[in-house]
Length: 150
Image 1 (cartoon, rainbow, N blue to C red):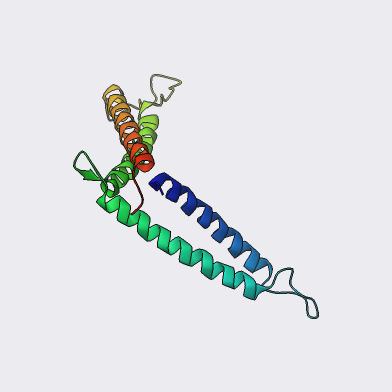
Image 2: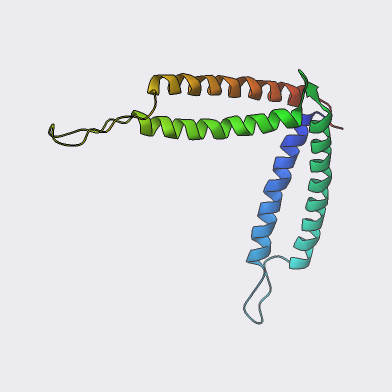
């Protein structure tokens, strides 16, 4: 099984888990004398099966990520880099948005508000971070489709 297929299966199991939680909650209580729409015992058994499958699959994915290398970095390291680049872009874009906003003055006597950074230089840094993110993400996607699951 390819890593990408395992990731898709993991997402499906996580969706099933969320659905089971909702179904369990919906059948936790009924009016006295009534029966639940689904048997909680059966749902709890299904929960165990899904969680056991998810645990095994996640362990295999994590082991695969830790031994798969590309250009001297493991897939785990590439995933961490991608996550941090995403966070950097969120912060940088928000800061850039605030730094580049113009504050209108209605008269020359009002206090002038100026940016504390070079917006042009900050935009170039943000663009470079976005490019790095795209490259790292492409490498991760390539490895996902070419790597066999451990």
